[in-house]
Image (cartoon, rainbow, N blue to C red; front, top):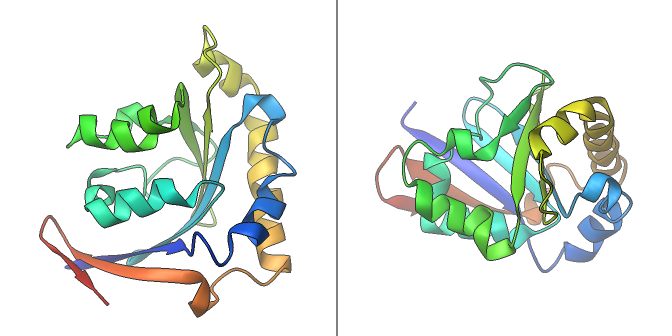
Length: 175
């Protein structure tokens, strides 16, 4: 595979629709950010409560160094973001957490090749334990939002995504 395509939802045109879906769950369990990524061998499509986060990752080319966006994770396990930044750690952390004032970010992989990502601004003492104890609830939240995206026919509409393609570890090319 020489190119992986990343899609992120149009942050202006569909912001209201996405906000309506994600607003139902933001605030639960101190969650301040939620995104859902559809992962395939060649494409990552991201629907986000903060689309600028993904847009910055994609446009900077850093998303190809963020190994959280892969379908090679165990199902229903807490994946702590900081453990997946093998290269360009400081730059990715700046975009994903520091610039958004997030204290803790993590994802949960689902066997249907969906990645539910969450972040909180709450500075809790033991975030890993707190969110591990609520993994089933978070999984249900992710499934609920994915179903809403599907029911409202937002998934896979060509006009909802800006499409970028990257050669692995090379300059990005617009498609």
